[in-house]
Length: 284
Image (cartoon, rainbow, N blue to C red; front, side, top):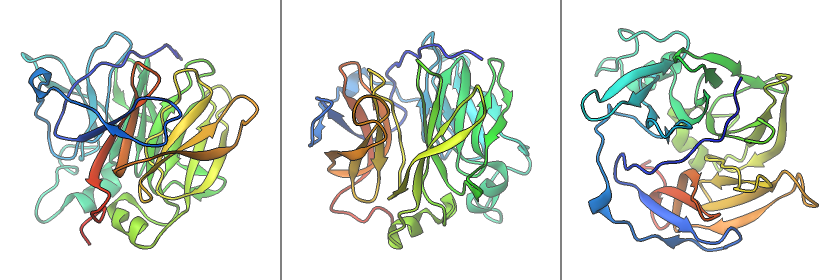
């Protein structure tokens, strides 16, 4: 299994609010200037959320709401099927008025985050942590329960390029993705940060009792993870090396509810916010 360094490329899939943390230790987010004239809109089926690029800058790859992962192959070819989880079929997984996404996704899966390091790692809200090889196709489920508790709402993922350890989050132990509003409404704090060892298949939980954890990028120097905590509109820092290893601390207050988080090229992070802080995170 390869574990090569991925090269992030920039692409705009739809309108998002982006906040750039200019300094790694900054405690406040600054909204970055974004030149829309340099962006390209890539049409996608409904329900896309996360994008990833491979080590050659190919892609993006994006998960969509019917359980597939698609790959962008340029303007002439467009999007093609790259991967899917177990139990996927186009007939059973196409939502309709009589069978909406909230029904189909529990069976077909819902990819929420991706990381491409040769193999493609997928965090699927219902299937758990999955991996698919270089040729794509059906993904293998690596983890669907931790410490005897099922993964009900698997969310963010990133890979340590030095150790190949895979870090991923579970947003709640009580609610599934189709019940995501309840995570906020109930004040649920059963989210977990987990680590998968691809050499031994062991899974550990470095941090539990997190409120709605989401994106989880590793820092540019591989010393800590940044964990998006959606409901309090914050980023947390979990140290994996150094004198503060295994400790979690506040990292940044945000002007809105964070979703996915990615490194930039200056030691900071891009954060996608899906609503402003003065709004309810979801329509109840």
